[in-house]
Length: 313
Image (cartoon, rainbow, N blue to C red; front, side):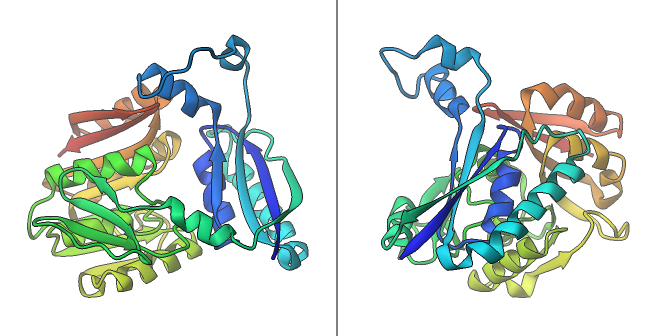
């Protein structure tokens, strides 16, 4: 089978948003290539190299987001992909550096691509209790572990990215049995599903992306948490009457700042707000925005270049 490999040039800051766009059009894998990941591995002493070209470290390099679509679908899907990328550029409104968003295409052989891609994924242990498991893998949980199953189109949050991982770790620390949870910008639903399995009474999952809402709904059903989850296509926090004991928002620093004035109205007194998707250059900006709302910072996590914050009201 022939595929078209579609490569989009973007920035580290925007790479996850671009990947979300690409996942709308493929079940065959999305890959990110970011030099900053290599730098972070070396900085954090996770891996060592004898030599790294200093020019690579100093020059700005595009992040490449690659997706694979069947060759026969390219003529139809490519204009839609480019239109969505342009919409992403316009919606960023200067708050997120999207880079050029240049797209480059080439034909590749891919008869075994899906199976190769699937073999890359294994059960992912995050924190003390959560295990993210692709739905095609059989996994027997140990005592106290909870499984979050995600389907083969693992879009909008898989647990592998630092921002999602930190949210799950903080969620496990602060959630209590019987809590009401609100997941703003739910993506795949991974956070809300985990909350439901960790003891939340009701979980409200919202997203403005229709594909994300479909993905979250499917994953809720696949995890058997339909009875205590509500998935809604919503412009973030429209309903002031909706109150949560724990809220999660894994988005970007700029959007979090714009949401800051509206979020406290949906958080119960004594509740916990977990924020992620924040790069270092936006960290103080986010802290200032939420401190101004009377929220008290409980905890800061860092993984790689990303930060997560836990606030109390």
